[in-house]
Picture 1 (tube, rainbow, N blue to C red):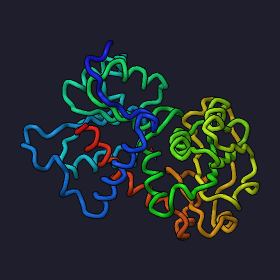
Picture 2 (cartoon, protein in one colour; picture 1 turned 60 degrees about the vertical axis):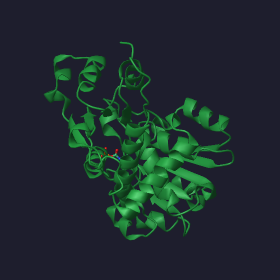
Picture 3 (cartoon, rainbow, N blue to C red; picture 1 turned 30 degrees about the vertical axis):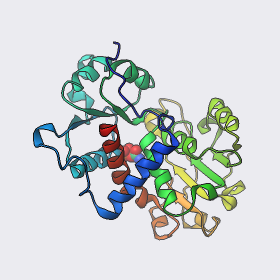
Picture 4 (cartoon, helix red, strand yellow; picture 1 turned 180 degrees about the vertical axis):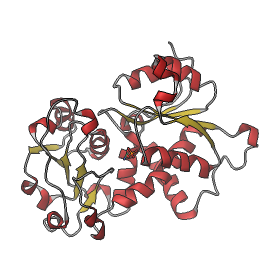
Length: 308
Ligand code: CP
């Protein structure tokens, strides 16, 4: 299972340079402000329009549909599945063979899967570009990208000095990608979670090595008043197995009264009790902007990876 080419993959936010991220954000902004008419694929003969495969081994609403919508709006074609039980993986086919199958039909692959060996298998197998749509509790790079793009619409990223992540952090891939993207010397990351749901020692060490300050607490009130961003993470029950977990307090309009006037409330969604839908009425909530921007950022990512 040795890859035949040096295909470019996006399996972590660390797979993109600062200048590449700027390029992707600039294109996403263009799509958002002017529509998709400048897509490079519109000028192509229909027989040479790239095909994007959407291979979702785990459930998704936002990520799958925004990739699909982005591809269609760019003039691309899509194939794929979102129920692995209807594919040959249900018969025991291994990922490296599934990838070899898909690359016979598609020019790029978007994959969501729970197993943490996914990036290694992709790198050793796929000859076409692969974009991670989230791997287990590891990373969700395109969510990290759309998060930072959405923050940048409201404030200068360099002015974000304190990010508070709240909830089931141990099992959240979105926290890892967002925080990695924002990490810089001097920034403070507060992680509010029970011991059972707290970030790993390795991730804490990685952030400290990057020059960030790290605060671990189980009390949101300790840090909420100083937060520039409050990132609310749902209980990831699908990853809990048989262990029992205590649920944490819902973030609601009362909680938001403790936030700074220019702070931002974010969530990757879905919300299942940890975030009161009534918070949508507060202009500091940017959760639906995150959802919408997912399509523009993923369009920019697809165009970039298929033309580089
Ligand atoms: N934010 C996110 O990944 O949502 P979905 O699971 O619905 O794709």
